[in-house]
Amino acid sequence: MRRSLRLDWLALVLLLASAPAAAQRASSVNGLARTPPMGWNSWNHFGCDVSAQLIREVADAMAANGMRDAGYQYVTIDDCWQVGRDAAGVLIADPAKFPDGIKALADYVHGKGLRFGIYTDAGRKTCEGRPGSYEHEALDAKTFAAWGVDYVKVDWCWAEGLDARTQYATMRDALLAAGRPIVFSICEWGQNQPWEWAPQTGNLWRTTGDISDNWNSLLSIVNLSMQHATVAGPGHWNDPDMLEVGNGGMTRDEYRAHFSLWAMMSAPLIAGNDVRRLADDTRLARDARDILLEREVIAVDQDSLGAQGIVVQSPHPDLQVWAKPLADGSRAVLLFNRASVPTTIRADWARVGIRTKRATVRDLWQHTDLGTLETYGTTVAAHGVVMLRVTPVAER
Ligand code: GLA
Image (cartoon, rainbow, N blue to C red; front, side, top):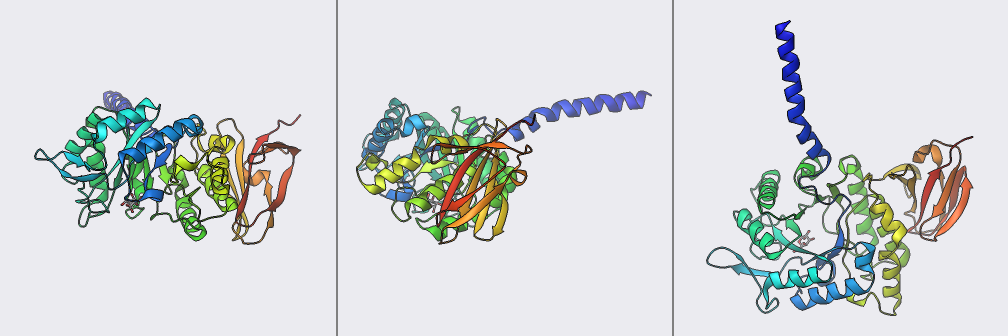
């Protein structure tokens, strides 16, 4: 009797002790990024050519062109802002390109109602050979916090012989100790199975190598990132890399597919084009604007349930029906034509997870209600998508 009472008591203590840990796993390491982060990053369009002036102009543009109001928050300088360390080991920004330092720039971005992100590397150097954060994690995290940084992307170059799980945990702990909420973006390209450990380490983790602005790159990234759907959720997201929308290497249909797939996968929406040109009267700018500011598709990405969509039907390797459960019980459904000819794709409600016979269907890109239907099929453009919101209708 006494023995079993003690066991019950022990079980209770263990249960209580493990509850916060379980809750933390279910949310995130720092309570941030409850929905996939949205913002802009310099790398895809500008590479190493970054400066305070560029970042200020980007922040101005995002505040004026509708991006900020559509949810894009983080303005992130990628590689090449840093040139060395001072005598105390503190990172030094390139004085020619960032003459007023990083804190003044972060203040400027904050003044535009946006958040500020920066880049470093968990290894000895960044991919462009600038100083890395290895053995400087605590100091760099404190420096970033003092500068007003809200988001840190941490790369994995010059990390030979280092263990990714250990180094990123060190950076996580340094950021948690730095005294400022900072979104932690892990960028080790999916080389060390981050989907197995990164949900307990960061808010997002790259699942693949770098994206390029072409269709084959897009397909190969989707093929890889879609495999890890079960580990995504509020506070911890698979990151199939930043957007190429508006950079000019793909057609309008391909960019729509790109943006729709990222929304279906609950991926971070980090624009990578020259958003200073988004209001221009060119075809490229108009298309990029229509895509990046498409609120009904963004709403799917940002849905509070935080589930990552999956392929539920594939009548042919080039034809896919994707489904993503949404918080209100409806489903986002994507008819995705990977082929280079227009083709009909049809979604079955049972397969997309709709349990009623009939459901209302809305076309999110066309902003059109298609009616109350028992199935839906249509011709989908080559390399194109049709994106739907399908809401069950209660049976009488
Ligand atoms: C790596 C990353 C890119 C970018 C560059 C910068 O390739 O994956 O996203 O940050 O480094 O050098």
